[in-house]
Image 1: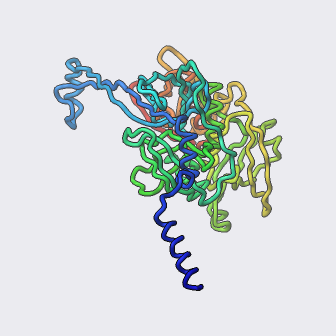
Image 2 (image 1 turned 45 degrees about the vertical axis):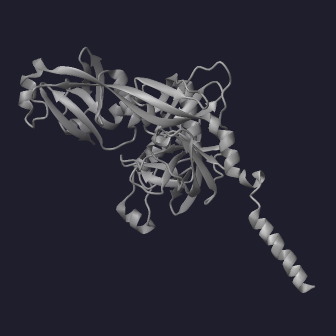
Image 3 (image 1 turned 180 degrees about the vertical axis):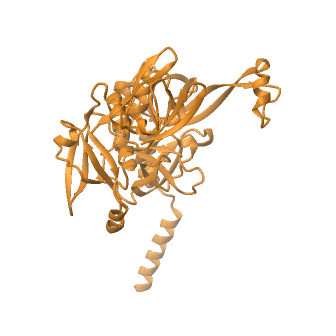
Length: 437
């Protein structure tokens, strides 16, 4: 009897091995997600016209020849192309992608799933600092779109799916797990950016495509920031995407938010005693969100919405991802105790950039036919101490061109709180680069 049972069990095992997997077994959660979300992923192709002037001595180290023969220079135009990916976030034809995919593009083309002919897209808004952009295509029928996942429910080790256009291969799918839900990485400007880290393969062709959870919801926008990395991918978290995209759609740009805090660096002794840094609250504007939120002078900002802050520059870079009317939760050190403060950020007050520039650097500016002119240098100010004078011409702030007061206001708003700040000043026919204070 025992031998008979053994024979029956052996036959069952052999049949199990021999029978092919059923369709139900093959249709995994990943298959279901790709089928559901794939039609909302698009391929993006951009064209850029590059113009270059060449002379008979182009490429020589001595620029004298180039200047002398400039009258003989020829301008040649080159057309370059780039590929990327995008995700449809609204059935009316609104898509999100990376800023570097469409930045400086003269034309943007989108290939929708199932269509051979490309559609030309228009740029709605772009924010290079977060590497996000919104574009739009005209459509006669509602398009398939992706839904946003909840803001902060990512789990370490959960399965994620990246869909994109690597090397021009349409709808390529890679899978992996979340290695870090909030990975802090330096932004190259002294600040910090936050990404989802995953081992799903992400390369330049995936840029702008969606990172999805196993339910097909959008949890991030893929970005290829470390091309030399092997087995490491990064995506912009959906919490940042949600804030930035809303402002790009409504205003065409990310408006600078106003907290009323001027941050500074904490002392080295405090860094050593705590084993970590922070951003010191050195000034609080009266009636500002910071004052209403209960912040005090000498508070040390330790976290912004759960993200560690080690310096004033890191605090400022994180704050730039919040448009006005949004709330931000700060963890601050007051004395020896940690406290929580919630600030509802506001729009910058009228003429804030001009008032800030005069108060912080001692420079009052005006516009003339040639650009932006220093009209007054305040006494005992940082500008006065380096002997700037009225009549100096301000042509650059942090390497960015300033040609009129609108440029000036934008450059100052982009760099609020950043100290020292670098300027290019012209006096007569001589140029100077200075840092204040």
